[in-house]
Image (cartoon, rainbow, N blue to C red; front, side, top):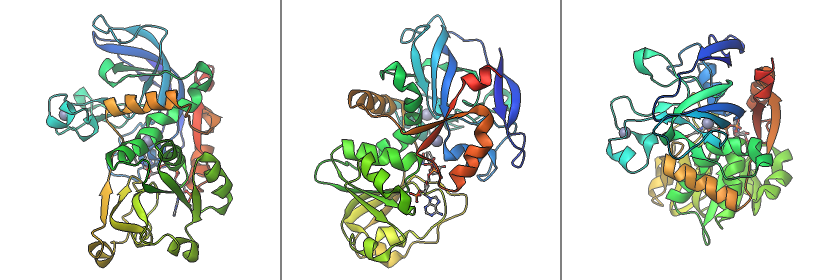
Length: 352
Ligand code: NAP
Ligand code: ZN
Ligand code: ZN
């Protein structure tokens, strides 16, 4: 099926309209008309070649909400007309230990997981993501959406920003009695604040933008620290169980590891294109502090997070854009000027 899309043809070419081919649904496939797609900083890193390995043309987008248009003969979970989600994964080996545990993002198979964009596909072609009018996905990688119809645009960012913060919050047991820091109040960070608060943790937001302090409190932060202010930072020394660091740029990690209590962990989810300065080893060894990483989330935990958000009335704070405005949106993202996730209304592409 010929499908309208927006693609970058190289790291330095602005996005422009194109057409891509989507497969007709096989027996286990779900064909989806895309309604909304969130704009993740990973889209920008990939399209602009900031991470190694981008293949062009590049059609990003992995926060997809859409309507089922057709299903294959073996599909029982979904039916035409149903609202569904697709996140960062569209395939994996499904036989390795990680896949068996529902942690498909850590697939140990020969090619690992298949990303919704820039992932491997038969014949060496490149998967294309949600900056497009439609997508066909194996039912295993399709998520049920239980939010009300009016909330759908604001649900899209849960598919990456939501799950990428939910997964480490759950793995490191954020909840009542725990003090959790969220560093960087952008797309991921604002969901981290909402989810940490909803899980019952004492939640502290760290921002470099003083104009985000009131917003961060409204999002659910119990306290907000402007991380450029040394006195504000020092007041929290040795006090955190867990810090989730979402910052998309290289920075000094010691300023945050110093805030962990003994045995506390800082989890890096931000993935800057250039490395952070090496952390000070003594700062870790004297309090058995850890620095860890975490990658998006598997399918079962993504469904768990979506259901938790539907039950608790949690969505993203979004600013709607047209597909044609994507370059402007990227420019604002680079200036930390997103409140707090851009979401593309795909009608703008379909009607163009
Ligand atoms: P975003 O919306 O651009 O938010 C990043 C935030 O980091 C900014 O809003 C800003 O918050 C802060 N920041 C930016 N530059 C900074 C700097 N130089 N120093 C300190 N703070 C800075 O990005 P996002 O979509 O949330 O993504 C964040 C990062 O996570 C990206 O690198 C992305 O690729 C990565 N990511 C990783 C995974 C994973 O699975 N691990 C999944 C999705 C995304 P303040 O204004 O509050 O300081
Ligand atoms: Zn993402
Ligand atoms: Zn696997």
